[in-house]
Image 1 (cartoon, rainbow, N blue to C red):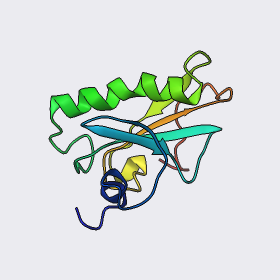
Image 2: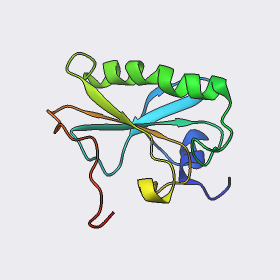
Image 3: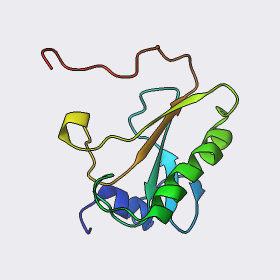
Image 4: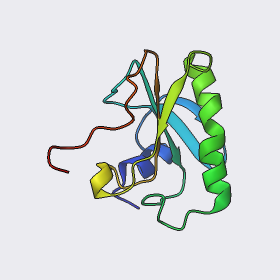
Amino acid sequence: MSDCIFCKVAAGEIPATLIYEDDHVVAFDDIAPQAPVHSLIIPRAHYRDLADDVPAEVLAALLGAVPRVAAAKGVDASGYRVIINTGEHASQTVKHLHVHLMGGAQMVHGMVTFAEGE
């Protein structure tokens, strides 16, 4: 997609310091981190979200990159959280499938927080 910011990162059109890359995915730090370590792992090809008929090899590459990125960021031993937002109710802000890897500090026990009344 020509207007997708993550497609531009994957294509090298927008500069980013890559943490990891292979034929299917690239990983880089989030520009608005919500944890001391907050990296994104994205497929090189454009898929809107998990419901976008993503090929099994791309899904395997996304999740296979997680421990590599965790090790590169130094959170493999202490632990990290992996999140994939899909759709409006999940607050997916960039409509390009991506995995959030967050760590570097003790996280609270609750998995998610919902808006009032939901």
